[in-house]
Length: 400
Ligand code: C5P
Image (tube, rainbow, N blue to C red; front, side):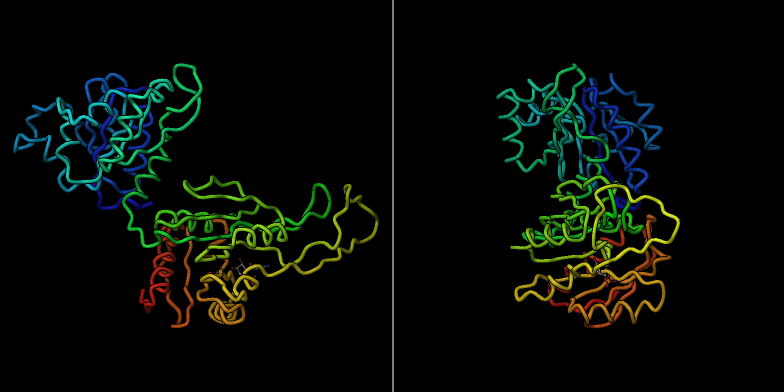
């Protein structure tokens, strides 16, 4: 994880019980390479102590306007200089109201006014406070002022009530913050992906499948959203959380995957087939468990459609990208598939490098040749693939 390498984030913590999630967010950011400066309001300091944030960030926590640690004596200005973003999480109803009116009577509100970096807020409050017209007015004003509002989520609240107003979870805030800092070369583009394995039932409990984890496809879906695309992900059976902002359709079999792809296809600019689709399915699925017998068992299989080849052959086909997982002769296998399926790009990898793990080493095969990407986290590999697709769509030859 190196999403925030070289970036400094200023995190404002105001007085809400969700401040405990801010501590977890700091941990995630630091793990991803960020330097984090925490500024607490007086109320914020009532919930999670400065010692916690100091230990997590390795840096002193900022509180007052009159803090003398900054040589200039102007912490309220200097703290956000050079920062990638200022995120207030949790942001209380009171703090949002101050922000909407430009009040600046403590360090954090002054930082918000005097900043020259993007401002994001993660509201956290009781559902009635959130729904109150005053809060909604303030939120609308903040949106107009260019402030990004992250959440809130619906769910159980500290007061025991159920509704909108829960602060997003730390991982969600991390994803949203990261996405907000990315360039948006895919803005206005629609991307459709398949991911994971398919499962072809033999009987009610058994089936044919393969060991694809879906991680590469999900990482790509996220990278496409981060790059500004509208993303639809057709997922086989995997146990992965849906990346934020992705429309997900769950399927089991190759035929269901094909149907979901065809239904979602109109209007798509890019189709990326990452799924490890079963090449064959049982000719028949037994309605009850197949019983063990004394002899051998013969299964009759029939071929599944090749979804990617079918999409690529359409007269108005989107820009098509395939994956080729080979156990040997990567270049011959991957380039062969690219030509045979008429694809703009094939992402090839050796199964021993990528299957089910969190890292992958891939080579990109396009009309101009082969381009290797170094072994990296699947999320980083996904960003490299997206950058390559963006460049190809823009008509550029790419050197990695
Ligand atoms: O021919 P092979 O299965 O190795 O090709 C892999 C590529 O084709 C992947 O992008 C995969 O998602 C896609 N594919 C497909 N439908 C199939 C088989 C493969 O879309 N039935």
